[in-house]
Amino acid sequence: MTQLNTKLVHGVPVTDNATGAVNPPIYNSSTYAFESVGSMPRWDYARSGNPTRDFLERQIAQLEHGVRGFAFASGLAAIHAVLSIFAPGERIVVGSNIYGGTYSLFNEHFNRWGLVSYPVDTQDLRELEHAIGGHGEQAPAKAVYFETLTNPLLQVNDVHAIAEIAHKYGAIVIVDNTFVTPYLQQPLDLGADIVIHSATKYLAGHSDVVAGLVAVANDILAARVYYSQNRLGGVLAPAECDAVRRGIQTLALRLERQQENALAVARHLDEHAAVARVHYPGLHGEAVASKGLRGAGGVLSFEVREGVNPADVLNNLQTFRLAVSLGAVESLAEYPARMTHFELPRSERLKVGVTDELIRLAVGIEDVRDLIEDLDQALAIATGHAQAPQSLELASLLS
Image 1 (tube, rainbow, N blue to C red):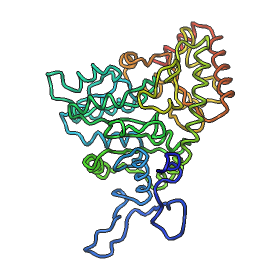
Image 2: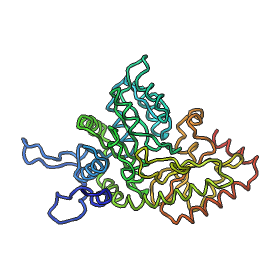
Image 3: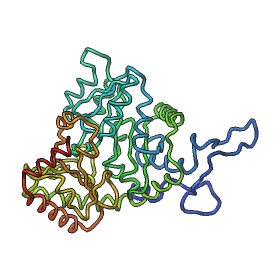
Image 4: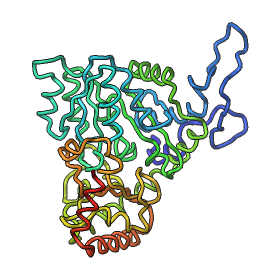
């Protein structure tokens, strides 16, 4: 049986050309010729299907052990298409700790069309079951949506346990697997029905393409998602499909190094006097394998202690780049309250633990000694600054 690392490199067989090329060609055609009026070709119009996109879609289905895959122009386009399979009035239970763009999609877009989202702490399985089942006051939810590792607090959701509860009430299980990738977990094997990726992140891996991918567990869901993909039209262009395919080939190498670096950085920050708390799965001996994970990924977050301005830390980093996104070869740092989670009202953000002191790091493949040295010098500058001006600056940032 072919192992995962080999599948990452080789993808699915290249069988559509007579040249002997080891990589699939990039088909830039927007339309395809019919042999005759009565014929129905495999390809007719690129929104409905493209050979280059088909290769990537079959590859993500293979990697996630799904029956079919879909490629979209962004992660949010993928989420939008998946949520579009539901009808007005239907209810989806949503993990309370999710990416800000996803929060906005639920609460500022789909709510206008009658889709009801109900936030819940997916770490609390009793509360989760109460929400999915409708607690005797409303019909059971049609779906539950959550992230494998939550963004930005890196809480580990138990896909198998959540899926068992959801399926008891006939709910579809939708998992955003961006932070984990199929290299570290395949949620469909644990009971999920739909897996979503922002392929911009680890899968592409080089901060040079925006893309989203979906894999589904059965043909019924495949037909529903394909309808959304084809009718909404947010498909991934051929060149970008090939860029993601190329990134996937080195996923194992990159992610192993990123995990190794992230753990070293997390351990260092955990002992730093200017740091109040570090969020990284397994840092303090928590068993991530019991929840189906083969690793903790390359993202961590930490809270600076009282009196240290996170903006001072971020503005003085030199090796880390101040930017949103994650999963690429270079290390990035960002301020969730102002950047990735700005869509959340401050009261909601604080309720789920995304504090004003929180910094998120997406650790790359650099020499970890340089990353630790960079963090140390930035924290030293931030610690040395006067407290009163810092408080005023932080307040102005969040106003």
